[in-house]
Length: 414
Image (cartoon, rainbow, N blue to C red; front, side, top):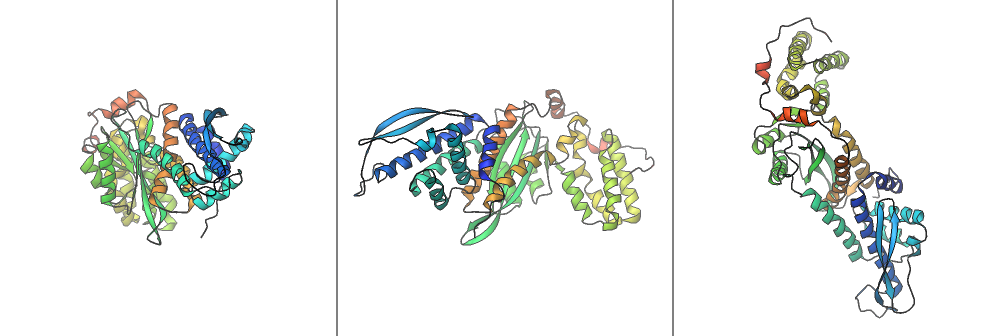
C-alpha cells in the first residue's frame, strides 16, 4: 500500500539546502547530477555505457566540463560527448532556479523513501530521461551510503571527552520476510570537549532491550567515547545495565518529562494537577540541597493521600535527581531529553513520509543523513555549554546525593 506524503519533499529539501552543511550537500548534489546526466546520455545512445546492444544508435566520446552554480557552491558537471551529434542537459543548465527545483524533487523523492526504482523512473521522465536502470539507482544509493557510513563510524576520540550523553530510541516500521515489523533506531548525542553538541551514533536493532543497548554503547566506546559523567534518557529496558557495563563511573538521569508521564499513569486523574504541581516544585529549587529537601516534603505529602504515587516517586529518587550532582548552570540541559526533541521531530518528518521502509539499510541511509546534517549545523553554531562549566562537571569533587542531604524540613509548598 502506498503511503501518502504528509509533506512536500521539494519544499523540505529546499529548506535543507538553505540550512545544512554546504560541503555535504554539494557532494550529494554532484553525485546525483553526474548519475542523472549519465543516464540521459545512455538514453540518447540507446544503451548503457560499455554495454553491447543491437539497439545502440550512438557512442560516447569523452566529456566536457561545465560549472553549475547553486546555493551550496559550484558543482563541476561532466557532460558526456557523443561521436555523432551532441548532447546537452538543458533541463539542468537552462536556468539555475529551475534546475535546482528539478534536482530537489529528484533528490528528495529518492533520498526520503530509500530510493525506489519505480518512483525514480517517473521522476526522471519529467527531466527528459526515458529510463533509469537498477544499476544506476544502486550507484546513487552506494554513494550516499558511503557518506553516511563514514559519518556514523568516525572516531570520537579526538573530540572527547564527552561529559554528558543523551540516548533515545525511535520505533520505525520495516518490511522483512514478507511482513511489516517494528525496529528500533538507537540514537545518541553528546557534548564534546569544546562545548558543542555532536551526533555520536545510530544503530538499528530488532528490539529495544539490554542486548541492543549494550551493543550500541560498545560500538560508541570502541570508537572513542570516554569521560562520560551522565547519560540522560527515558527508562529504556536494559539501558542502565549497558551504561554500567560500558561506561564505568557514569550515572543515569531519567528524563523528567517522560517520568512525569509515567507517574501520571499511577495517579488518579482527579489528582493530576496537584501531583504535577508538586513534582514541578522539586525542580524549581535554587540548589541541590533544596531540591532534595523539597523531594522529601513532596513524598511525605503524597504518602497521606496517594501512597501508591508516593512509593513510585520515592523509588525513582536516584534516577530523576542525578542532575543535582552537577553545576546548576547545566541542569536544564541534562535533566531531560527535551533538547533532543527538535532532532527527533526532524527525523520523524522524514520517516513519516516513508511510512514503511523497504529494508534496514534505507533507515540508516535516511536517518544517518539527517543526523549528519544536524551534526554539521551544531559544529558551526555557538557552544552548547561553556568550557568553565564543563571543567567543573568533569571534576570529581561534587558531593554525592547522600552527603548533600541533611535538610531541615520546612512547610510544604507546591
